Amino acid sequence: MRRSLGKGLELDDDPARIDVAAVHDFLANQSYWAEGRPYDVVERLVREAQRVVGAYDGGRQVGFARAFTDGVSLVYLADVYVLPEYRGRGLGVELVREMVERGPYADIRWVLHTRDAHRLYGKFRFDRPSERLMERYHRG
Ligand SMILES: CC(C)(COP(=O)(O)OP(=O)(O)OC[C@H]1O[C@@H](n2cnc3c(N)ncnc32)[C@H](O)[C@@H]1OP(=O)(O)O)[C@@H](O)C(=O)NCCC(=O)NCCS
Image (cartoon, rainbow, N blue to C red; front, side):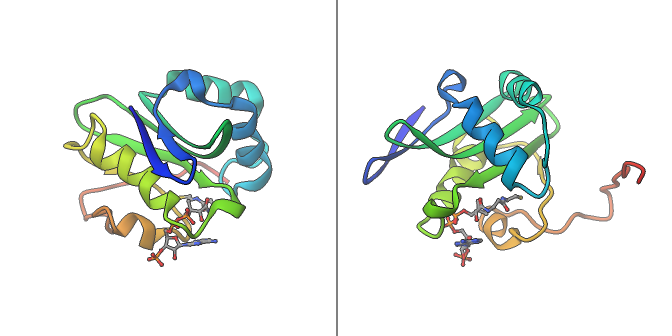
């Protein structure tokens, strides 16, 4: 899948195209959820994901999203970001749309965690968890 968004921006789900150094740089140094994540871990997560979607401005990686799943019961959306200078022009919405609604996992249950992007995900029918969902928090 390769989809042009106009003005030189495009989405691509080719894992080989992911600029792991750029993704690592954002996640390790600018994200609130993966601060300090080592490079080799980011590399492995990209390699082992069932689907990654990158947003590109020409050759530059400007956004990213990762999904992992058993392909049947549950798919988890992780590591969604758009670089600060590319925010506020619909790229985040298109990244999530491509991953959730257009990909091979559109018909199974999605789960994610977010601190403050509820409105973004609400556009794609993400809602508060039902009473059936439980979470085992890590210690500390
Ligand atoms: C969340 C994020 C991916 C949205 O990307 P984006 O390209 O700015 O998104 P869009 O332009 O498609 O807009 C989507 C929503 O984000 C909001 N938004 C726009 N600019 C924003 C900004 N600079 N910061 C935060 N949210 C912003 C918009 O208001 C819009 O919601 P609305 O239409 O209901 O008002 C991006 O702000 C980001 O990377 N944030 C830091 C990382 C992060 O928090 N990721 C989510 C982890 S769960």
